Length: 264
Length: 260
Figure 1 (cartoon, helix red, strand yellow):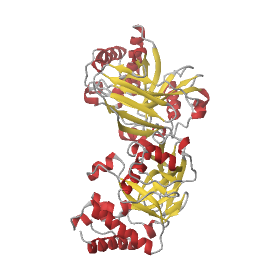
Figure 2: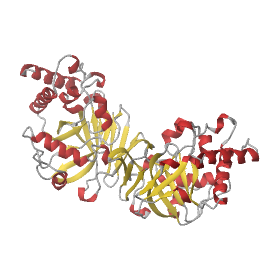
Figure 3: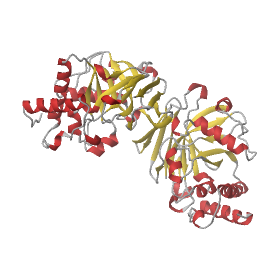
């Protein structure tokens, strides 16, 4: 894999980007100073941020996929989505409270998540492998928060920023894969009682489980895999919607109940 | 607007439909109210019925917030469906014979088993009166040049209704959540949009209740056996000869159409 950063630069950039998250301030995108940076460099930074959190005692509790809409990928001129990791303190209970004081400029997306019961290895992982490895499906609202000024970034910068991950809220209703059609499963996002976004699972790479196969294949590029028991957010079905203190959000999922949160 | 002018404009729109030659926006030539526009649409309908067409249902339009904002209105509109407009799923739709500037939209069609007479119709009444719901493509078309429509233009033009296709599966409203059911639309094999029931006024059921209550003010009811097109759940997609469109709705089924 093509890399341009030294180990010291990776460590320094990880500290810089994670510092923006922990201290709640925005920073210019890092490719301004390192225009030659590659995806491999960016994932090095992301994995270093993950290592830093784990060293501090935070458990990594799942993975997420981002940039999973064909339209958005075409717009950014790339052919694959990106991934990030979820740390234990990202989790917010259903009906819980998200403290905006700890976030820079949060937005929400409706997603379908899965939990695996068998490991998934790339390369060559396909949707059939994924179907066989799914334990259950669970609805999720993701809160994203780019650490970059005005959500202005390129893909390499956003990979280094852990794919803008910050919080997530899981619903209380699980389903077996054979009981739901993830492609046509509809979602309705309501903010303060008003419908703001609608969509169906197919908005995620044609099928949310395609996203999981791509995750396994992306991880394989670094010699990693998806272990059994992994919680995976497959990617946004709706456009990201900005939220602010006082907002109350509910997302309804066809056959999977609803997920809600309050922002203070 | 006097009766003579209403007749004249209704005839003009009917003629435009028959000849497939769009006309200048009525609103660019006359001052007309929405009530005038509905009167014009009834004249256009009268001409269709005189030519042997039969009313088989109604359609609701302007149900999405985006379209309402575009036209500067905060309510839907409606038009009539006739037997000359309906196609079965998988059918071939001849644009060159029937349409001017068509756009396809994915919808849920209701088939009623009881009459609904507004005002005072609730969502519960609509559900109780619904025999089944069916996936549907409505192919809207405008007899107004370049779709340069204001609300009065589209109302007068039978809510820009063109033709429609009913899918091959019917489901009882007891078996599907019409608010959250997801929609996936493909054009020529490529996915172009997704949506869900809530895109139409929060629920397709709300749309049918609105229609029953609105028509109730004119003493018109929705009839058992009628087809009601409840409004688009996705953005309108322009279509041309050679296009193939497919819509699938979670828990309901699919419909497809080929254009020639």
